[in-house]
Image 1 (cartoon, one colour):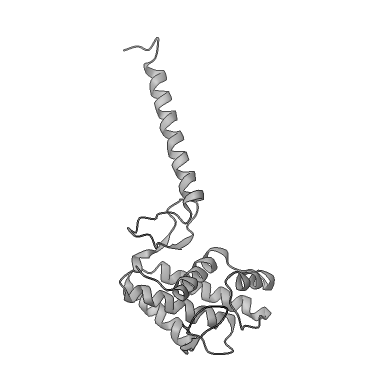
Image 2 (image 1 turned 135 degrees about the vertical axis):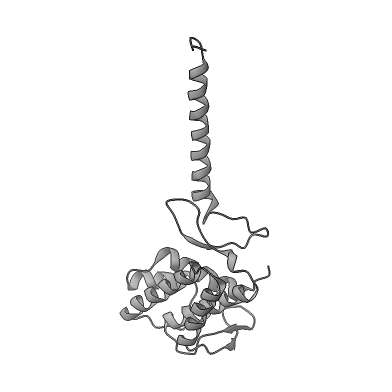
Length: 187
Protein backbone atom coordinates (compact mmCIF):
# COMPACT_ATOMS: atom_id res chain seq x y z
CA UNK A 1 0.00 0.00 0.00
CA UNK A 2 1.36 3.41 -1.02
CA UNK A 3 0.93 6.09 1.63
CA UNK A 4 2.28 9.58 1.11
CA UNK A 5 4.38 11.41 3.69
CA UNK A 6 1.53 13.53 5.06
CA UNK A 7 -0.86 10.62 5.50
CA UNK A 8 1.88 8.61 7.24
CA UNK A 9 2.73 11.56 9.49
CA UNK A 10 -0.96 12.03 10.38
CA UNK A 11 -1.36 8.31 11.12
CA UNK A 12 1.77 8.42 13.28
CA UNK A 13 0.29 11.36 15.20
CA UNK A 14 -3.00 9.50 15.73
CA UNK A 15 -1.21 6.38 16.97
CA UNK A 16 1.11 8.36 19.25
CA UNK A 17 -1.85 10.30 20.64
CA UNK A 18 -3.72 7.05 21.34
CA UNK A 19 -0.69 5.55 23.06
CA UNK A 20 0.51 8.54 25.11
CA UNK A 21 -2.40 10.82 26.04
CA UNK A 22 -0.86 14.20 26.97
CA UNK A 23 -1.91 14.97 30.56
CA UNK A 24 -0.85 18.59 30.80
CA UNK A 25 0.28 21.54 28.69
CA UNK A 26 3.96 20.55 28.87
CA UNK A 27 3.23 17.04 27.60
CA UNK A 28 1.06 18.52 24.85
CA UNK A 29 3.91 20.85 23.85
CA UNK A 30 6.21 17.84 23.65
CA UNK A 31 3.68 15.96 21.50
CA UNK A 32 3.28 18.94 19.15
CA UNK A 33 7.07 19.33 18.81
CA UNK A 34 7.58 15.57 18.29
CA UNK A 35 5.14 15.61 15.38
CA UNK A 36 6.23 18.91 13.86
CA UNK A 37 2.81 20.49 14.21
CA UNK A 38 3.30 24.15 13.38
CA UNK A 39 1.13 27.23 13.46
CA UNK A 40 -0.76 26.41 16.65
CA UNK A 41 -0.89 28.41 19.85
CA UNK A 42 -1.21 26.07 22.83
CA UNK A 43 -3.47 26.93 25.73
CA UNK A 44 -4.49 24.99 28.81
CA UNK A 45 -7.93 24.24 27.33
CA UNK A 46 -6.23 22.44 24.42
CA UNK A 47 -5.23 19.56 26.70
CA UNK A 48 -8.88 18.57 27.31
CA UNK A 49 -9.79 19.13 23.66
CA UNK A 50 -6.94 16.90 22.46
CA UNK A 51 -7.87 14.21 25.00
CA UNK A 52 -11.43 14.27 23.62
CA UNK A 53 -10.12 13.83 20.06
CA UNK A 54 -7.94 10.98 21.36
CA UNK A 55 -10.97 9.15 22.73
CA UNK A 56 -12.75 9.52 19.42
CA UNK A 57 -9.78 8.18 17.46
CA UNK A 58 -9.83 5.21 19.82
CA UNK A 59 -13.44 4.55 18.86
CA UNK A 60 -12.42 4.45 15.19
CA UNK A 61 -9.71 1.86 15.92
CA UNK A 62 -12.15 -0.21 17.95
CA UNK A 63 -15.14 0.12 15.59
CA UNK A 64 -16.97 -3.14 14.92
CA UNK A 65 -17.42 -2.39 11.23
CA UNK A 66 -16.16 -0.19 8.43
CA UNK A 67 -19.55 1.55 8.40
CA UNK A 68 -19.21 2.47 12.06
CA UNK A 69 -15.61 3.62 11.54
CA UNK A 70 -16.72 5.73 8.55
CA UNK A 71 -19.49 7.36 10.57
CA UNK A 72 -17.02 8.26 13.34
CA UNK A 73 -14.48 9.62 10.85
CA UNK A 74 -17.18 11.67 9.10
CA UNK A 75 -18.18 13.22 12.42
CA UNK A 76 -14.56 14.13 13.22
CA UNK A 77 -14.02 15.67 9.79
CA UNK A 78 -17.25 17.68 9.93
CA UNK A 79 -16.68 18.98 13.45
CA UNK A 80 -13.07 19.94 12.70
CA UNK A 81 -14.28 22.29 9.98
CA UNK A 82 -12.02 20.60 7.45
CA UNK A 83 -10.68 23.10 4.92
CA UNK A 84 -8.32 21.44 2.44
CA UNK A 85 -5.53 23.69 1.24
CA UNK A 86 -2.21 23.27 -0.49
CA UNK A 87 0.85 24.02 1.58
CA UNK A 88 4.63 23.92 1.13
CA UNK A 89 6.71 24.31 4.27
CA UNK A 90 9.64 22.96 6.26
CA UNK A 91 11.38 21.59 3.18
CA UNK A 92 8.40 19.52 2.00
CA UNK A 93 6.99 19.94 -1.47
CA UNK A 94 3.36 20.86 -2.06
CA UNK A 95 0.94 18.81 -0.02
CA UNK A 96 -2.56 19.11 1.40
CA UNK A 97 -3.46 20.17 4.92
CA UNK A 98 -7.05 19.63 5.95
CA UNK A 99 -7.32 22.09 8.81
CA UNK A 100 -8.23 25.75 8.49
CA UNK A 101 -5.62 28.46 9.08
CA UNK A 102 -5.61 29.35 12.76
CA UNK A 103 -7.10 26.00 13.77
CA UNK A 104 -6.51 24.79 17.30
CA UNK A 105 -4.23 21.82 17.84
CA UNK A 106 -7.28 19.60 18.45
CA UNK A 107 -8.89 20.75 15.18
CA UNK A 108 -5.56 20.22 13.42
CA UNK A 109 -5.25 16.66 14.75
CA UNK A 110 -8.91 15.86 14.12
CA UNK A 111 -8.86 17.10 10.53
CA UNK A 112 -5.53 15.64 9.40
CA UNK A 113 -5.88 12.45 11.46
CA UNK A 114 -9.45 11.78 10.40
CA UNK A 115 -8.58 12.35 6.73
CA UNK A 116 -5.66 9.92 7.00
CA UNK A 117 -8.00 7.36 8.56
CA UNK A 118 -10.54 8.11 5.81
CA UNK A 119 -7.94 7.30 3.15
CA UNK A 120 -7.38 3.89 4.76
CA UNK A 121 -11.12 3.21 4.89
CA UNK A 122 -11.63 4.24 1.25
CA UNK A 123 -8.76 1.96 0.21
CA UNK A 124 -10.43 -0.97 1.98
CA UNK A 125 -7.60 -1.09 4.52
CA UNK A 126 -9.47 -0.75 7.83
CA UNK A 127 -7.97 -4.04 8.99
CA UNK A 128 -4.60 -2.25 9.19
CA UNK A 129 -5.88 -0.33 12.25
CA UNK A 130 -4.92 -2.63 15.08
CA UNK A 131 -4.35 -3.06 18.79
CA UNK A 132 -1.29 -4.86 20.14
CA UNK A 133 -1.88 -8.57 20.78
CA UNK A 134 0.26 -8.57 23.91
CA UNK A 135 -2.16 -9.29 26.78
CA UNK A 136 -0.86 -6.47 28.97
CA UNK A 137 -0.50 -3.82 26.25
CA UNK A 138 -3.36 -2.92 23.89
CA UNK A 139 -1.50 -0.01 22.25
CA UNK A 140 -2.76 1.10 18.86
CA UNK A 141 -0.74 0.80 15.67
CA UNK A 142 -1.23 0.89 11.92
CA UNK A 143 0.07 -2.26 10.25
CA UNK A 144 1.81 -1.02 7.13
CA UNK A 145 3.66 -4.29 6.54
CA UNK A 146 3.33 -5.69 3.04
CA UNK A 147 1.61 -8.89 4.15
CA UNK A 148 -0.39 -7.37 7.04
CA UNK A 149 1.19 -9.75 9.52
CA UNK A 150 2.15 -7.37 12.32
CA UNK A 151 0.63 -8.36 15.67
CA UNK A 152 2.48 -6.19 18.18
CA UNK A 153 2.87 -2.44 18.61
CA UNK A 154 6.61 -2.96 18.81
CA UNK A 155 8.27 -6.24 17.91
CA UNK A 156 11.33 -5.41 20.00
CA UNK A 157 9.33 -5.01 23.20
CA UNK A 158 5.90 -6.62 23.22
CA UNK A 159 6.59 -9.19 20.51
CA UNK A 160 10.00 -10.16 21.83
CA UNK A 161 8.76 -10.34 25.42
CA UNK A 162 5.97 -12.76 24.45
CA UNK A 163 8.28 -14.87 22.30
CA UNK A 164 10.78 -15.18 25.17
CA UNK A 165 7.98 -16.05 27.62
CA UNK A 166 6.68 -18.76 25.25
CA UNK A 167 10.20 -20.15 24.81
CA UNK A 168 10.75 -20.29 28.56
CA UNK A 169 7.39 -21.99 29.08
CA UNK A 170 8.28 -24.62 26.47
CA UNK A 171 11.64 -25.21 28.16
CA UNK A 172 10.00 -25.57 31.59
CA UNK A 173 7.53 -28.03 30.09
CA UNK A 174 10.33 -30.02 28.47
CA UNK A 175 12.35 -30.04 31.72
CA UNK A 176 9.33 -31.15 33.73
CA UNK A 177 8.59 -33.89 31.20
CA UNK A 178 12.24 -35.02 31.17
CA UNK A 179 12.31 -35.08 34.97
CA UNK A 180 9.23 -37.30 35.10
CA UNK A 181 10.74 -39.75 32.63
CA UNK A 182 14.27 -39.59 34.01
CA UNK A 183 16.18 -42.13 36.14
CA UNK A 184 14.06 -43.84 38.74
CA UNK A 185 10.79 -42.98 37.03
CA UNK A 186 8.20 -45.70 37.26
CA UNK A 187 6.76 -46.88 34.00
